[in-house]
Image (cartoon, rainbow over all chains, first blue to last red; front, side, top):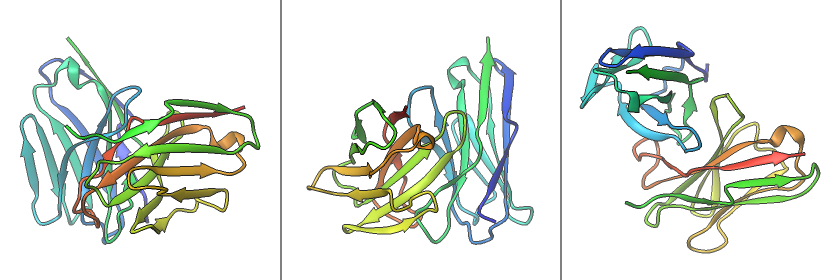
Length: 111
Length: 115
């Protein structure tokens, strides 16, 4: 019940395309859903986060869509750029500070 | 921009040896964390720390692990007797607030290799 399932494991997108990464959870106590971006050799960095009181949050080219009833949330990267090539992790937490991470998606954006 | 720093960047040790991984959290942060990432796998929570006490720990954080804030700036993770399976990237993180309100800022990590 503490798991966060993430898909796909890897994603190849052409420059300018839309990258979509999906996550699902079971624990209804989760109330904070961040997405982290990780470049090789670096620590995860917060990209964007959402709480269940809204269904969508947009920051620049990055959008989180949240479906509370389905217990799913997704990251959309519009106009994907080669510089977006990284590993993306969804995560969740609720009532505690512990972040439960998904398994990660390796995104490659080709020019 | 303030950042979390970690030393060393890479630590190689023999099985059974003790290691101490060091972190300097962001200066005004009050909540501190350790996570680990085995190569190619997801990031896993180890422990959270606030007000000089462990707030929460995972099943991974057994008696071989301990954390300490020895002074006002450092936050350390000690592994008493390392095992081969402790080989991983260890990330320190800190936040200004808790309970998912405060963003957790991650350091660059320490790669621990146990031979």
